[in-house]
Length: 252
Ligand code: PGA
Image (tube, rainbow, N blue to C red; front, side):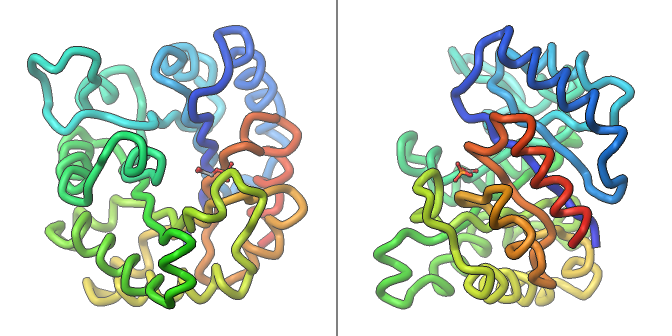
C-alpha cells in the first residue's frame, strides 16, 4: 500500500517563510524514506514557487481548494485545469474548514472531486465527524454518508485515483488526537466502504489520518494497518516536525 504524508499549510506563511520551508524540505528529502510520498499544500500565491522549488526532489505540490467549474465568471476562484497547468498534482477537497466556514456541502465537494479528476489532479478527499456526532455514536454513519455523497458516483478506475483523509473534526488543531485504536477502527471502516467498489479500489486508495498528528504520536497512529500516512496541519509548518512525521510513516 502507498504511504502518503501531506502538509496542509492552511492560511499560514508569507513568501519568504514559504520559500524557506520548501528549501529545507527539499534539502532533507534525500535522507528520508523513499517509500513515502510527500506532498505540500501551500496557499495559492505560493504554488508557483513551490512547484519550482520542489523540482527534482520527488515532493509533490497540492492546492488546498479549487472551483468546480473549468473556467468562467467566478471572480476570485481558481479552477482545477489552472492548477494542473501550473504543475500542481493534488488538491485537498472537503476539508472540514471549507465545510464549516465556506458552506461546502457533499454535493459541491462531489463536483470538485469530478473536476479535479477530469484535470488529472489527485483529490485528497477529507471526511470526518464532529464531536457531537461521535458522542452520539453516529461517527460511522456520518463518515459513510460523506464517502457516499462525495465519491459514490465515481467508477472504480476514478476512485483508485483518490486519496482519502479521515480527519475527526474535534481533533483538528485542538491538540486532541484520536487514539490509535479509534483511528484504526475508522480507517478499517473506510477501507470496507472502499472494498464495496472492489478489492482493487480498497488496495489502491491510501487512507490518511489527520487531526493533531504530531511527531510524538505519529508512529503510534501510523502503526494501524489501515492508516497509510497522515494529513498534517500545524506540524507541517515546521520542517523538523514535518520531517519527523515523514520518518515515522517510513518506519511504519
Ligand atoms: P492539524 O490539522 O494537524 O493542525 O490538526 C490537520 C488538518 O486540518 O488537515
